[in-house]
Length: 141
Image 1: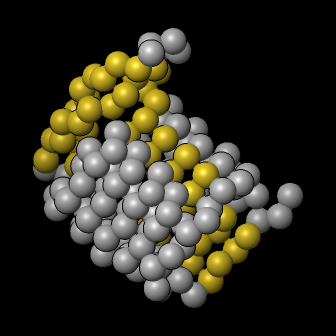
Image 2: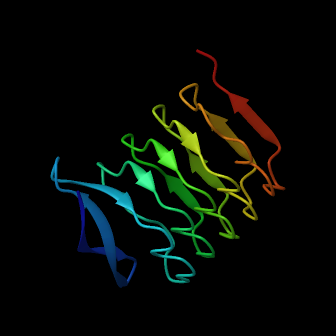
C-alpha cells in the first residue's frame, strides 16, 4: 500500500512543498511522483532523500536551472523523461544499483559524459536526444 505525504525541501531561498510516495509496509519514503516538480524554474539542485528508490516520469522535466545531479545510492529506477529538457544540466552521477533508465531521461540536456553502471538491465532509448554526449562509459561486471 502506498500513501502520499508532503515534505518540504529547501532549494536556495525557496521552500518546495512536494508529495512523496511513502511505502506503508516499510515506512520509508520511496519515490518522487510523476511530474511532481516539472517546469519548476527555481530549482538549481535537489537534496535527494537517502531512501528514494524511484524517480517518477517527468518528475524534474524542464527544470531549466538544474546544473548537476548526484543521485542517492538507494535509487534503482529512473523513469521516462525525468531530466528531459533540463537545459543547463551538464553533470549526472549514476550509482551502482540503478537497474532501469527510462526513455530520454536526459534528453535536451548538456550532459557530455555519462557512466552507465553494470547493474543497469534496461535502457532502451535512455540516451535518445542526448545530443551533447561525447563520452559514454559502460561498466562491465
